[in-house]
Length: 104
Picture 1 (cartoon, rainbow, N blue to C red):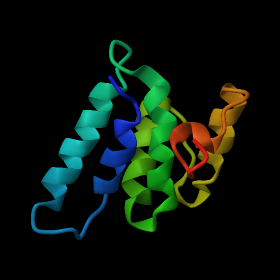
Picture 2: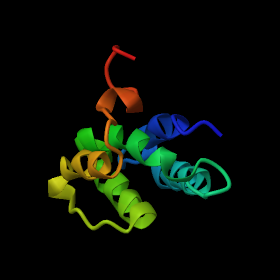
Picture 3: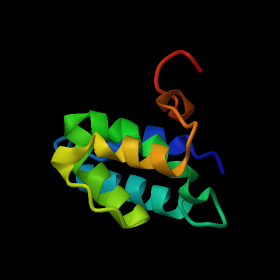
C-alpha cells in the first residue's frame, strides 16, 4: 500500500521495449488500477504517475490511465495540465511530494 510504487510502474507504460511489451504494460497498468482502489491507496497514486507524463515514450498510456482513474480529459498534448489540476485539488502539494527531484 505504497502509492509511490506507481512511479516505478509508469516506466513500463510504453511500446517498443520488446516482444512482450504489451503484456508487461497491461500488467503494470492493472497493478496501478488495483492500487488506485479506495481500499488500497486511492487517489494517492495519481501524482506518482506524473513522471510518466514527462517521458514521451510513456505519455500516451499514462494519460489514458489518468483519464480513467480521475475522470479528467486532458489530452496527451496537454500533459502539463495534470499537475496544475492536482495542485488545485490539493493546495500545498508540490512536485517534490511525488518524488521529483532530490529535495525530498
